[in-house]
Structure formats: structure tokens, C-alpha cells
Amino acid sequence: MAVASFSGDEDAYQKPLDRYRNDGRDEETVREFATLHANALGGLVLAMEETQEDVLGGVYEHYGLTSEHFAQYFTPGAVSRAMAQMNLPDTDSLREATPDDPLVIGDVSGCGSGRLIVDSAHRLQNLAPETPAVYLGYDKDPLCAKMAVLNFVLNAMTGYVLLGDALKLDARRVWFISTAQLIGGDHPVRELDTSERDRVLARFFGVSLIDDDTDAGAAQEEPDTESELDVDPEPTPEEPTLAPNLDVTLDPSDTSQAGFDEFV
Image (cartoon, rainbow, N blue to C red; front, side):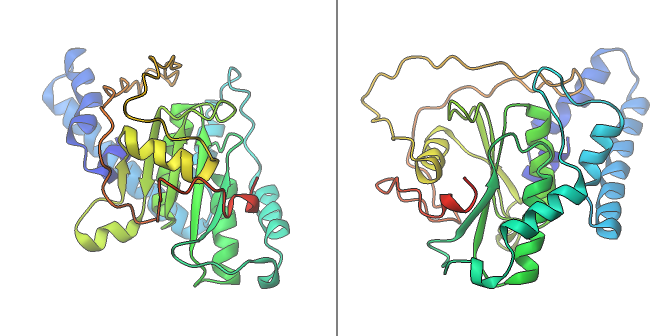
């Protein structure tokens, strides 16, 4: 529901509420549930502002929701902050970056709630706040990927969160996050279509783009295995179309991995 709120997807926001209605709850109970969600989201924002910590990931761990199936072990906050400082020790460690060729910083080994990426973003902000950067998160657990999306939004980070198997370089869903979109009256989160997902994989991971005329066959996708509280069906595959301009330059003819060495 929170991701739907930040992306302006009314249908996705209503799905959990409809499940409560279909289970026989009256409308007053459903409205109360929506109010509880709004209060929880507000509380999350205030707690993050006060603590500068990954509150969402902490709640996830506290209630034992980590998945043995995915071998989830979240990096402790003190460790992720130390790693961020070691990876970005000083301004001399940064290469020159431009809006067309930004730094690329991320966690593609299973980002969880995005804690390491957020701490790296904070470190870069302290070192060189004017440095253009794009942040990448990659996780095969739908719930973790959505937590990372929320943490990107609430920390004003521009980047992409990919849902899929990073070892296979597949991405069933990809969200683009940029609070700069608010200036134009858009929502800070946008889920990418098929052609845009392909371009992200090509730009940042060197995956070859498939010709529209090529019959690539039906991809075997793993089902979402998140909890029953959030079981969004997979979106219907779309025919590749010309993608609109993204805030980050993505040239389909350039599949180089410029900037990828920062976090590989």
C-alpha cells in the first residue's frame, strides 16, 4: 500500500482493502485499516527523521519476517555504516561524475531493505553532496524489494530497485525512484515497462538488448513468495515500446558498464 501511495497506483492501493471486504469485514473496519496504514506510514517517516536509521528493516527483523528460503541476513546498521565509510573514505576516492555519467552505487547481492545503499548515500552526501549518483538495489524477495523502494523515497535517493534473481540478471519488476519527479507534479515512484526494464539491465549490467523481431520465447519467472498480506499478481507482460525519457541517461546503443566498478 505504501509503494502504491508513492506511485499513485489506486488499483494496487485498493487490493488489500478489497481482500478485507471480501473476507466479510464491514466498511467501517476497512476504513479503520486504511487509517492505521496512513498513521503507520507517518510514524515511519517521523522515526526515520529522528533516528536516521533503517526503521523499516528493523521492524521487519524484529517480527522475524526474514526468510530462510532466501537466506536473508540483514547487515547490522553499525556494520553497513562502517562499510560505507570504507568504500567511500574521502573525496579523493571519487571519480569525476556528471549527470550523464553519474556514480553508480548499490547492492546487487540481495539488498534487503536497502540499508547498505542508504548508508552509502548518506556517506556520499556528507563527502560530496553535489556529486551526481544513481543508486541500485536488487533482491529476489518482493517484500524486501518494496522496502528498498520505500527507503529510497524516504531518503530522497534517485535510482532503481530491481525484483528478480541477480545471478541470472533477470528482473521481473523494476521501480524508478526520484523525488525530483515531484517538481513536475508526478509521483516519486514509477514502475518501468518491459522496454525500460531491458534498458536498465543493458545500461548498468551489460545485458544485451533483444531485437523486437527476435522470438525470445516465454521467460520462466519465479513467483512472488512474499507474505499473504502482500501478494500482488505479476503485471501482464507488455509489448516493448519506445520508452519515455528517464531522468538518468540510458542510451540503448551504449551497453558499457561505466560506473559499475564502484560497487561490483
